[in-house]
Length: 390
Image (cartoon, rainbow, N blue to C red; front, side):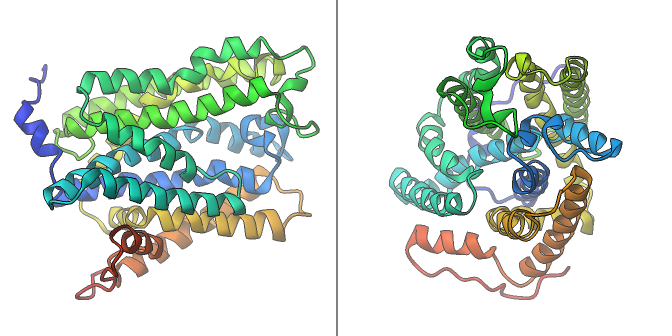
């Protein structure tokens, strides 16, 4: 049955301060899954050559099961979890601005100061690991703040166009790559130098466009009440079914093609077009599943909510653990994708446990608390007023 358009007054209420328990917990739950979900791809950058992140055949393959691990991650995780993370970041910009306005604060200046602080954290994080996304997010955030009141349809159309910028321009940039693929450099090969300027330009366009595009889509979904869980189960079931079926089918087609062409550099950039097309529907499908799960009260989903409440802390500690263990301690170990997958499971278990323990005692994660104190330039309460269950 066709759903009637959401009344404008309802959309305005949805953009106000978040107070309803389900709305808050749905955001935390999605964010928790997303921050854990970005680790499988980031771990490849910690433990293998950078080319292995983009080219499954470029590293970490020691047995047939490594192929299964690699291709599974590329289909179900690559770009999809970062898309969720970006989507939620866009939501966060709007939630913060709306809450600041409701409290009579100077929205623009307070938000910009918050972005500057995030940029500083990102720069420090980049000194530890060059795969940081916080700098990019901090640079995109003022744009999101500026356009957050645009019509929903324009936010969605602009967001989709930006998110697909890498896919749309891939044929143009692929044409700059010679027969030997030397221009691809360490994007595709383990034994070559840096990417050419053209390929690097495509890479940054692809990453930045997708991040900003998903942020804008996140703002639109927030205005429509979708990301807060305000629609009925039938709506989310349809979103999950169509998003995951369509997205998985399109993305899987890429790897059928990759295997058929033996991971040829002739299609290094154009070959990723299916993943680019499948990322948005899969991310929305995952989001719908998580929102439905969030409605079923259980201690399992509560653990993921708590991971989400301290997403910044967990993201940064993933880097500390990854760089320390996979990059430094095990630098002389020929790591396989299966070995890295086992390490990922261990980190997931640790972060689920540690987040549950911490949030039972404190209101914010360590870095979230520091960011909040610096944002308002005053010490914020940290300890819970009373011990929380779990």
